[in-house]
Image (cartoon, rainbow, N blue to C red; front, top):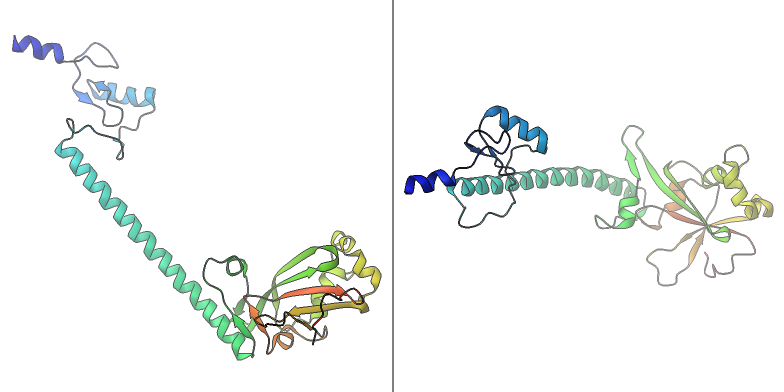
Length: 248
């Protein structure tokens, strides 16, 4: 009776459906009888034959093999997490080294530079750096053309560049893009001599602005001024800049 019951529990190969099954696929649980049938089932079912490490296993079917597999899975997770953490820390240290040197060089030029916490928008945007080869600061510069509601960013500007040359990239007929000049026609039509550039007095309680000398370089302009990550200049037209009420 027991022998008949055992025979009734045996299943045929689910691939060839002829021979008695000997193997059970760890991935999809399909019963197979031989290597050719194993290979055939992988092709037909697009199965890689690997057990899903996160799949649910009923406690009645849980075996020592499942336990060992789970233990190895946890080891892999721990190892990968540790590796990712060490790589991130290495990148963070390298990144901070360059930021610290950038800060040090700016402070040496009497620029009151403040670097924001890692992950903040302005910090992530900042492409400013210290060029070791040229021994100079290279700034990210943003210009806000207030009357046209247009913002333009230059990713890297040498510290010796004058404000006049920076503006020329947007309004000079030979240096600028025609489309940008068209968008800034109110500035160009007013005359370049009427264009005024301001820098907000960061960290000040009076919410004022500095009127800048366009013939000066970035280093000269930013000296003794507070900058958060990178400078942001406000460009207006003389006579239409009343809102900048506290200018020195």
